[in-house]
Amino acid sequence: MLIALVVLPFAAALVSWFIPSNAARRGLLVCVALAELCLALSCWLVQPEEMGSGILCLDAMGRLVLTLTCTLFFAASVYAVGYLKGEKRGRRKDFQQGLHFTNAPEATFIGCLLLFLAAAVLSACTRHFGLLWVGIETTTIVSAPLIYFHRHRRSLEATWKYLLICSVGIAFALIGNLLLDVSMQTQGHMATGMSVDALSLDAAEHLHPAWFKAAFVFLLVGYGTKMGVAPMHTWLPDAHSEAPSLVSALLSGALLNCAFLGVFRAYEVAVAAGMADFASTLLMAFGFLSMLVAALFIMNLGDYKRMLAYSSVEHMGILLIALGVGLEAARGGVLHMMGHSLVKAALFFLAGNILARYHTKSSHDVTGMARVLPVTSALWMAGIIAITGSPPFILFLSEFSVLQGLLHAGKLPAAVFFLFLLGVIFVGMLTPSLRMCRGKPPHGVLPVGKEDLLMVLPSVCLLLLALALGLCMPGWLDDALSLAITDQGLTGVPYE
Image (tube, rainbow, N blue to C red):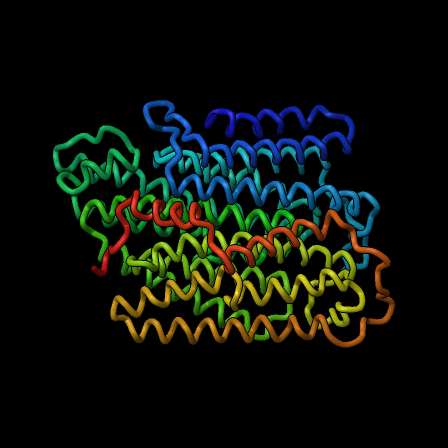
């Protein structure tokens, strides 16, 4: 089953380049996305067998990331059908230059989307540091053409920045892998492999503390760069702003989770090695720095897509804080990862609808959205309320769990600072969003007769799911969240 999860989208990507019809190619994209989602859901019913001496395996955390990735990709594939039809009709222009521009071939776009899915699934289905690195590096390579879809100078600049910064980050992660191996050999003990299980079993007795700390720093900086953690976040606002909205949704909702999984795996080994205090200090430092940077940039930011990008920087910071605090905050962090993926993907889909109608990314030039795009407007406000951690959405529960963890750990100043940053970001995101929905539409922007169902339905489903999980958490999912932490022995670490 694990082989099928990886091979199916990879094979479909190769096939897509030889399909002459764009309509058939879009159909293939949706069918493969649906098949991957069904396979991911079946993993909850039947535990897949390990393959390659445990190189390919699916634990509780990986299963959550896999299910999230496949869910978001299916939503993005449905959205892509309406989006690509709009692109074909020539609705998208370079409005700053006043010129039409040429998009990338649809075969390349859909092929890279499917390759991205294969790489993300591979990252979720392994506990081997080497294979995890390969999966995350592959996502960098195949997502670059997606960012450059519009083939404009700004998208070219964003693509090169993405490639350069993320390549440096992934190189740091590779050095971290090498240092992990060195940390085993310096104690006169050869590791049985580079899997998390092999390192964790041998860690307490054989890991060299100095070499392991160096390895953890490199892994955190490397995968943290791909997560968009400050101060390595600079690629993220440009890439999210210039990429097609469905690509931004996948980058923010799926790609960042894969990078977080790399940090999570490294922290597992740190806990087993008895170095949780060292690791948690770094995690919380980078986490609060990310929240602070996001809060500073979100205030008075005039680009609504960049606003969503900096919101991702904030939420990646919250994930690091939750992981570093331990206790119930770690479980809340896993819940937060789910909530952020669902809501942020929905918001990027909606941002694409707004851009297609208003032809601008400036929140100051978008007014009267309630009249022009009434459904999108209502969903946009619901998404903004959800992403800022307001009840009754799932992110309120996760952020409250992180706050409880900070308080139970005796970190009152950190808890107060955490609340302050959340408040600043709430105001910074809600103010421009209200201005966008209210007032009169700009001259020449008329209400649409009927909004495209394919470009609205994915956001509706994702936001309803985020609302439903906030109101009533299913017992099986609650157990899965706890299992994702207890399986790795993170509960109660480091502040017992």
